Amino acid sequence: MNNIALITGASSGFGEATARKLAASNWQLVLVARRTDRLEALKAELGESVIECISLDVTDREKVKKRIEPWNSKVDLLVNNAGLAVGLDPAWNADLDDWDIMVDTNIKGLTYVTRALLSGMVERGRGHVINLGSIAGSYNYPGGNTYGATKAFVERFSLNLRADLHGTGVRVTNIEPGFAETEFSNVRFKGDGEKADLLYKGTQPLQPDDIAESILWCANLPEHVNINRLEIMPVGQSFGPLPIVRD
Image (cartoon, rainbow, N blue to C red; front, top):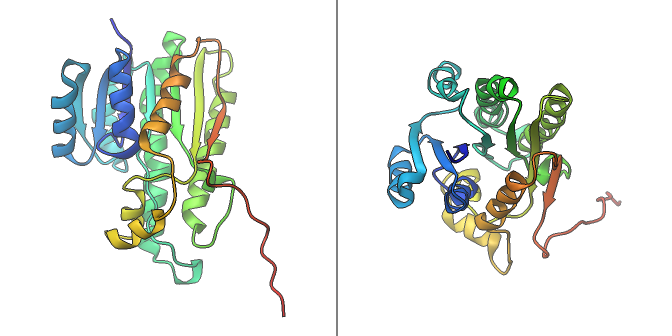
């Protein structure tokens, strides 16, 4: 029987691209997302590779327990991809509802899904949790306040999982993409496609397939190899000096 991967946020972006890559490598898939129509379209495309589509908001703790836990003894790879950024305002002007959405999805949802599947991996002595973090968890930028903090949590949570899982055979990886072109910016700018398009104008950002290829590589390494963190930027993105206020 082929290995089974469960992917959250599978209806677009990194999650959708990862589903395609894993399917092409003979993985069987459980696809999780809120948008049922997109899940069904992806299932139709990937055919027998998709075992089940689960329409689910990962922030709903009880529904995660009900829908995800039945896979506890079966999933070999969990790709925690569901996440988002909402808004880019400075902290004193930010909408608290936006902050709640990011904390609920990027932190709580990720922990709920992980907890639902982790004990089964430990019992079998194998498995892999791949979390989608961000370079925003390491590099600060104006307006990144709560989003960056949630991704810093993902990075710390991933490493602390590694500590808890020592000796179990279960692997944990945090993938940290930089500037990437997905629906991410459309969500951050609340559907303002023109503003999102302007962000990418004249650039060559990472594409979903780039990150999916990295996830596939990590997942297919020998079981004694664990990639703790993988930070990925496009060549056109690098580092800048710390800003200084001058009179």
